[in-house]
Length: 232
Image (cartoon, rainbow, N blue to C red; front, side):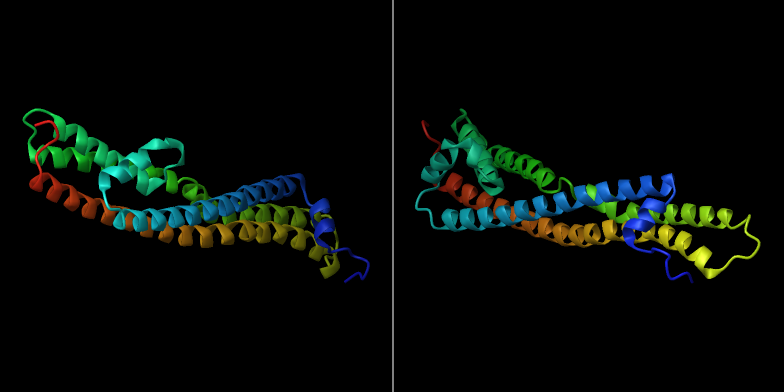
């Protein structure tokens, strides 16, 4: 092999065909967006875990649920997922309970529906960008492989007019083609790892939310059975 052959990463990319360069640019952009999503989602889930733990502690140590509801309702912009679930359920509970001739079963059903609807909206928000990570992890290797195949095809086409092919003539073309596969894996591996980790964390938060809904529903049911509706 020619000792002067430059096989550095920059040289391989600059000497690659236009198609391979476009594929590398696409994978680099996707990787950049992927890392942005990874960090943003990581910080968001960490904040959601802290907020959930804080509100659970506040809820179970609160002396009066009505007072807690009034505190949570004051600032809508600062409420987190579990606070929104609590606020939506208790608001619907109070509204249905004040209705003339309110059926306790319908009061509880309305409170549960309100909490489940808020739960679903918050889960959609927590799961946002996970589909992008999943797509990046599954598609990027194939995009990189396409660039590799294209580069190898070009390398062998360039050798068709050479009487005798040597390793020094083949190596640069093969190396620049394999860069696309490496870039595809560079984009895919972090996305797959992050997707699996964050999916697990979202599932754990969902389980905590659902547990809270059931426990809060039991508290509301006991409250409904032990005291008459306000104003009746």
